Amino acid sequence: MTTRLHRLTLAAAAIVIAAPAYAVENPLESKYGNSGAKQGGVGAPLAPAPVIPDSAARKALAHLASHQHPAGGWGHKYAVDTEPVRAPGPGNGPLHPARIEPVVAKHALLYPPTLADTAVVLSAFLDAGRTPGAGDGAAELARATEALARAALARDPLAKDAAGRFVEKYIGRAVAVPLALDALTAARDKSADRAIRLTAEHAAERLIDHLRATQRPTGGWANETQFAYVADTLAFRALSLAHRAGLAVPADTLAHARNRALWVYDPATGDFGTPSFHNYYQCCATLNTLHQINETARHAAAQAARRAALPTATPADKTAATAAAAHARSAATALTNAQSLFFKKLRDAYRRPANPLAPNKAAANPLDPHPATKPVPAEPADSDDNDDHAPLRIRVPVTPHDAIAYFLLMEAVQSAAHPDARPVTDGVARALAKAQRPDGTWRDPSTRDIQDHFLIAFTARALLVPPPPEQKP
Image (cartoon, rainbow, N blue to C red; front, top):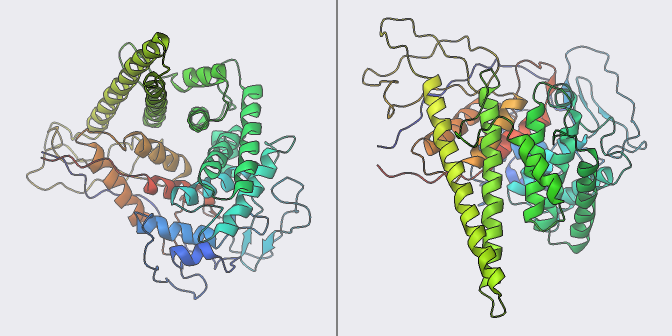
């Protein structure tokens, strides 16, 4: 019987913030619904666009649309409680020219755009079906694409404005380039405007060159930060997407990146992850890497099959098609086995103590390095967590690194046939929607003074991933 995930909990404090510091009339906002900022309350969202599967994602996109910087990109909006507020200098980075001052209000400050924030927000709108060439918000997304391209074509794409505070500290500034490559590749493929496509393609090629030139002997790019492996996973993902989109990605760069992204994966046993609080973040990253390998293998097999079917096909073409098909089957098997192992790990992490009289304490969240402190509510009397078919009860915290993990996981299992895949992704989506604030944002409790557009956009991207197919009982 198909399992169901229900009653997910979130340990997050409610935080009262000042009114938005910056709001403009933006077609993107009217498309996704008003968050209520302009009227001082919670606005009723407009009818959902067919391409948006989740109202929480619509609310998040509406908020992001209303906070686009005049320079075209997005940065952090810092909420403050005391005066005076001193604006930072305008800077000289490619995303915020000197002529554009930060927008300042009495109790809040909208910082200039960063490469990482702009890339993730642009990707979220592209995931939602918006394009920079036509339709609602086309002009605003075109400005964002152009701003991102200017930064990519700068002498040093990783200037001081490349990433925000959290990204710099925990993931590393180097992750900004893969995120920008991801966004520019999607803008190139989805834009109906030829000039925008050419601009995005030129900038994406520049970022591929940058990644090749700065790749370390280990195959990765990130500094020794806490979540450096997440940056390397996102780099392999961006290079894989660019390769499948037809951009010229050096084979050795892609191969080294793949090996680095699989550093905790044992192909002999299929096991992955290390015995640490990073285990489940590593699992989500590894699953997504195997997903990208599978998608690339399927793409190559389809191309080889088309060549082999041509009237001019040679025996070598047919042999290559056979080999590519075998490689695709192998990649699919590796991904399926990894998905099964992941859901087993998830169940094992949340099993109740065998003794029914033992205190029912919350297990540490497998997607959060911080220990959970709130007790798990009691299960119904007929539920047994030691049964492999019983419902799971997991926690879904909201932090930037968790949002990335949810996105990587949901993308990696979107075609999974495992019976736990749909219940888990549905449960995560419901928990994220429940944790959303009335203004369409999510807040990391550990950063009380910051409204993080990086976090909001990545959470929205996770919600926009199509869910796995439902499995019949």
